[in-house]
Length: 344
Length: 53
Image (tube, rainbow over all chains, first blue to last red; front, side, top):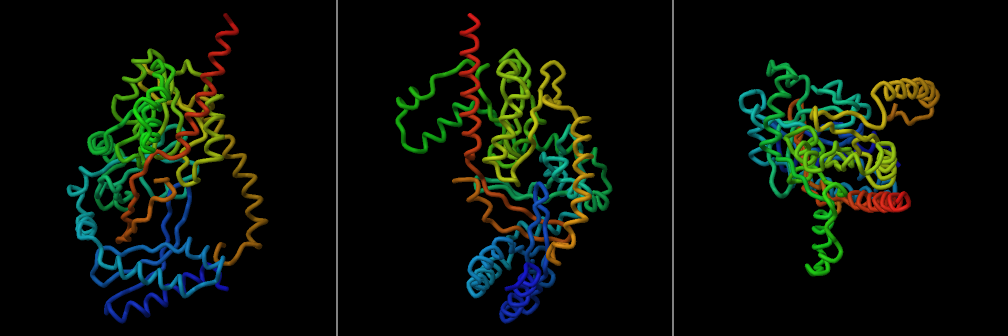
């Protein structure tokens, strides 16, 4: 059996051998990409000479299948098929890659996304960002967004250098563009549940009976955007939280349910500690690691329109991080010798 | 569509960067979990208020 490094190198060699029969200038390279919360995807990039972009085929899942059944032939068939299907990228991606060096071409497409600072610390070294409590705002160029999904490019320090712009400038554009290009949506939890149950062909009368309208102050509100993708950042955009707080006549607690949305409730509906316990429990049991945003609850102060940690403070969190790093540092030294070579 | 079934679209590498595709998602099951947990909180609050009366 191959280890993961050998597996990737074998796939790279075989895909190169196969594609060179049909594409003279093809070049297959190993590469890796860092996703949210420290998840790293390993795979191959299948490029053609002079092409601006190359499809990336990730091999993490394929390796898991290989470990289960050892069927390398099936994996190679699937990978080669994917490479052939995508070797000619969509025209808009090629033009975006070509235009990417020109700040004027991208500035009106810069949007922002919110991620957890600690869990993304290694990514944030290479990416311009602004911190908000235990979260960070990072910036992306929106290539395309429609009812099928969203296509983006994460802005790196290197891009910022050749554009000769500052993080503050990126933030300024992102604040304006995010509100315009990815408008904030606010839905009561009842509406969300009605939508979900409505998909199961239940009559309007039954839905009415199931969802007796609660007073506004006693409801949860889901804050996101139209595609419900990377929509938690909506808590930092627009006037919607302020309007909601005004209707409730209280401040709000914000529950970071995932990177895709957050949930707002009146501060009259419980304590921050109790709600943080709810967030920790649901994160632990139901939300994938890649989608988690934070285990902490925030307070939206209606009078100052500001968001701050509610169940803890940054000082407390930073002292916990230092303690963990000290403990992890010792463990890391002990573990290093037992890890497979390709993970060292 | 469950969230875990999304993200089947291809990413593309460019020189110094990645074009990332993410598919549109319906509300995931964890949002429903918040609804259930919050209903319990409301119920507890109502019972507390009744007891105080």
